[in-house]
Amino acid sequence: MIARSTLQLFYPLRRFDVLKKHRAKVDPYLIAALIRQESAFSERARSPAGALGLMQLMPKTARRMERVSKRELFDAKTNIRLGVKYYSKLLSKYRSDAELALAAYNAGPEKVDEWLKRYETSNRILFLDLIPFKETRDYVALISRNYYWYISLYADKSSKKPLKFKALRFHN
Image (cartoon, rainbow, N blue to C red; front, side, top):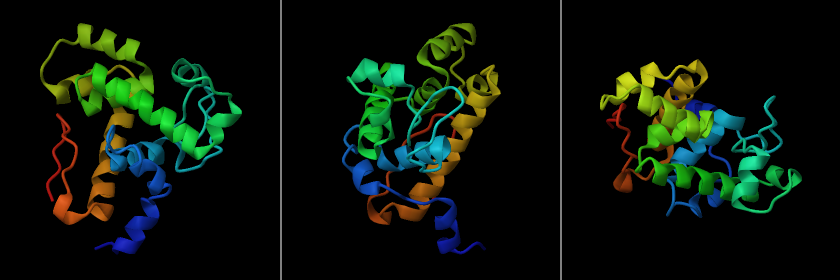
């Protein structure tokens, strides 16, 4: 058995005060899971594609939501606010389907819409397996795993109501 303190090293919970401010829009543990995958909580993270900050926002995507400079995307509060705003829009677009919203966050909503038309199925596991981008398939699975651990390690047991994933079910 791995000690809880060891697991917490692998699944750190940084900037949780900022994440909790946005809990009305998105589960803060899901945002922590997303940040862990996107940047490993590095505020200065920069991807080869040009995504910036904790939630790895593309400057063009961020500017569609708010007038913001590239430099401002390295500010944790700004990056989280805009990242949550964007993910929340994706959740609305995909009717609270966390997996589709995560796939869209990674590959773009245009791609997810294309895949939904191409692979018409109500079986979420099959749909996720049919996503043609390995990176996106892995991304959804890894964030789902991260989310499980954040809920298990940090959520108040009496109020723990994990997000409903259609393909994955978490049991504690």
